[in-house]
Length: 169
Length: 316
Ligand SMILES: Cc1cc2nc3c(=O)[nH]c(=O)nc-3n(C[C@H](O)[C@H](O)[C@H](O)COP(=O)(O)OP(=O)(O)OC[C@H]3O[C@@H](n4cnc5c(N)ncnc54)[C@H](O)[C@@H]3O)c2cc1C
Ligand code: FES
Image (cartoon, rainbow over all chains, first blue to last red; front, side, top):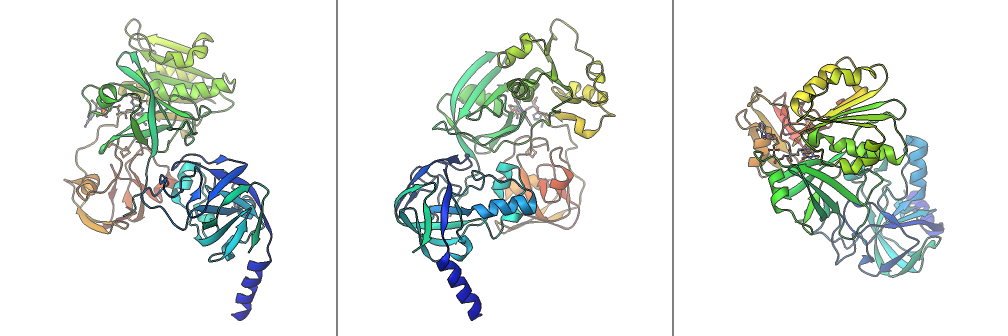
């Protein structure tokens, strides 16, 4: 048991990642659009995104979520879907804002880390949503269970660019 | 209590009166953002008012991805959906629409023969615009209409190129559908959308064709026996934690409505797919024309569905 905990702590401290893609959309169900840069606002979310607190037109219209100001997804999951399930899921299709590479998202719940010049705190793992299958016409719900990305709060805002580093604090 | 958004919000950006009791509506995002994608010949539900949902085929093509264009023929004696669109809807009004569904599985290499009657041309306009955009000419449209065919402006290059044959049924006899499609019986794809007698003729003409090479698009549900004959069963709604007994006189949909459950209902006859619901325990009885055998393993068209056993559990 101790061994597992220390291994987890190690993973959580030793990684180095990078931002590969940035996406946002202003309203529920609308396609995500790719951007080279996003503006992160501390305590609220991404400028112009559906989950920006105070904007409230996301999937749950009347439920701004303190812990879902920005969402992340692993590039490695897209590769695993292609390799293990033969499903081509594109970075604009998983509906999370930031596609990262080299970041162990599932180990970061409860931790703070640096995302470009911003600091975020991971609140919980994202859960896949059935409507993603409806939108895409691809059977991705089951393969995405337990690797559907990470929801975060923005502790310190700033500009986030494709190519920025993602690092433990 | 959190309330999920179930529809895409759109704004009416253009309304055109095309004559012949037909209006064309263009729906866009309020900021002109791209809209959820669709297949050629797909349809969606327009939520006109609480309890008033109607399904329309998209006339534009998937590549034209910032608008949904629908054309609506007025049914003066209908339940009021088309009258509402004709009489009440103006530029600037906003409506929720469902995600687009369905579409026509075009054959990329062989001939695609489309047979349309009147407003039934809408799904084929989308398909033709899609094919023309890709410079594909492997299709023919046979289109009957009474008087001038509205919407022809959306496919004028195809008409000029001779790929569309128009039949004004006010002046000439209706075409014999069997003759239009028989040439392609061995390899082509055929699809039909139009009034009931036309669909019946078409169904007869392609009877021996394999399912994947034919498609029937219905705008009006087939007439049904008024009441189902299954014995009463228990209905359990898992999400809303409600339980009721479904009796034949009320039916499954009537029971859901009585419980105040928010299910979108458009055709009420198992052809549009608006009321598609996930089921957990059954087995359900399927009577729709929408779901594939694989989809029926987890979904039910509740407007015409029932349960074959004592208990039906739905994810509602
Ligand atoms: C997949 C799909 C695509 C469609 N695409 C289009 C389109 O592109 N353009 C378009 O104009 N319409 C389209 N429709 C039809 C549309 O959804 C509406 O049905 C239509 O606009 C009429 O609506 P309404 O409420 O005015 O009349 P409705 O009540 O829906 O009436 C439609 C027809 O059914 C008859 N009818 C109504 N109730 C009954 C009943 N209980 N028993 C028997 N007959 C009845 C009416 O007399 C009328 O002829 C489509 C339907 C489907 C399912
Ligand atoms: S409402 Fe059209 S299929 Fe049920």
